[in-house]
Length: 268
Image (cartoon, rainbow, N blue to C red):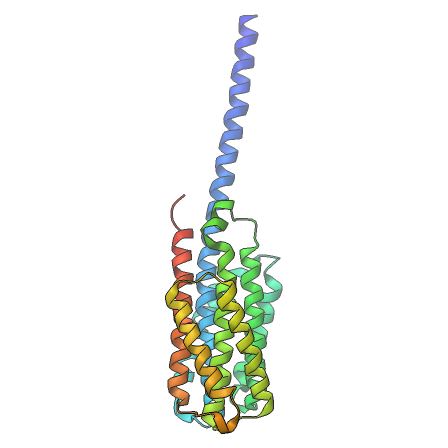
């Protein structure tokens, strides 16, 4: 009887030990996958910043500021560098569709970028970046995140990047308008929509004060420069200076993004 009891105890212990080892392996695997996803998010954020900057430079070039051609080529070189580092995204069935759509769209846009009209160029960049945002959302919805991760800010990442995208659209559209030194009804209508979105970003996203101040400053410039009647508008700001101010606002939000990513990458 004692021998039977002893054997049963050992068997239970072995089962428990195997279960513990399996759980530990699963946890380690999940942590590894989460670490890989965090690296992907950082690269995707970088790619988004490059695409947004490329859009703004393209808008300025096509509206007459051809002196930005060197900057444009440099951004294309940086995009070409970061894209291969994201190729592993294609291994995830839930990511592959948006990843492939992004690659295909960029290849077409890159080949025809400066032969497009300013309006079509802007629209193509907007659609490209919208696909990238979908891809980023796909990554944040993978099953590797804990409640603690969401508490640390995984849910804020997409909101921050959507804010930078509305600022980026304002940067491209506005700097293009200033470079061309003209306004049309369609441009003003688009800028008015962007202004509404920026106001929502101010109200809904709990950013730090520096980001809010820079976004508020940009909104004031947009209102004064693009949305007032022509006889009341004093477009005293240059295309370059406007581009820099909008870029500074984007950078303040990207710093917030990096701060959240720092919290998420801390050892659990």
